[in-house]
Length: 377
Ligand SMILES: Cc1ncc(COP(=O)(O)O)c(C=O)c1O
Image (cartoon, rainbow, N blue to C red):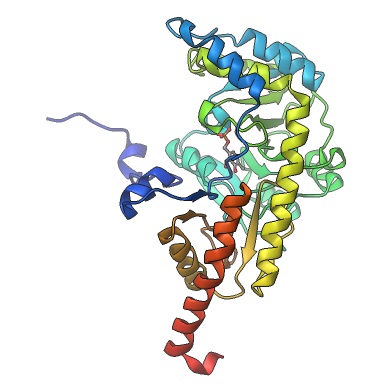
């Protein structure tokens, strides 16, 4: 006799949605010199947040407030919503897990974009849901076909990230609004807005809080520079939000995370400064792409997808070359987006290293490909 795992777990591969840069460093036996692959913010958190967290360090013998009361109040004020419309959780990743647990049972259908954020898929598979994937259209999530797929499969959740990862594009405001209007009432739209701080207001949809089938997710991991703190939140209709109370890890938010996020919210200047730095770095990455006869995908995020204008094998080799030279970048994992590599914005010194090794990586590959099949050139 031995312990019995659930049917679902027995069928799951032992996988992680993303191999962490630390694991990669261990496998290549060197530390990265530039960490520009995980869409973190190299600009770090605001000084105000750092000093608040330092001040409260000696209090970590206490659990954090399980209601996240102060932080939820501040978030409600920022978004002009009520306290009851917000749930705080361990990053968007944690909240996606709770959301899927609330809605998905074995065999339920879920719709997403092929190649979109894989952590959502990981949770769906973990609860036995069936994923239906719709291809990107012109590097953008295809809201029209996603809606058709929802109707065809009677999906219980539709996942849309806006702006999206890994291509960095954004959907038109009117298209998001049309999607919401036409979505069946039995389908919940999970609008992942991890990168929304980087877009102008005219891309941010206004969604009535009475809309029972939309939940939007936000994070402190990107513009706020606090990925390691694990703070995210969701905004939605109050009954929907109330259901999270039945399943969430009530002591999941550390005391330091709550204090840090709260202080960060009050530092408006910091955020606009980060947004400017992100724009500058994005422009520089785009210029490097151009200078190397590659194509960049115009980005609304803190990263840029660079089309190496060959196939996925080529892009993978370019990526490997960069990684082996201490430059951590990533690439989309599904066709045809996997012809690209994805470079997060960085400090000048990070982008300098990318600028140095990218042409070498491209050249080595062109040469290798040329010699293996000169007829193609
Ligand atoms: C689209 C998207 N959603 C969510 C996340 C993760 O957010 P968090 O750090 O809040 O879990 C990421 C991180 O890269 C992302 O790209």
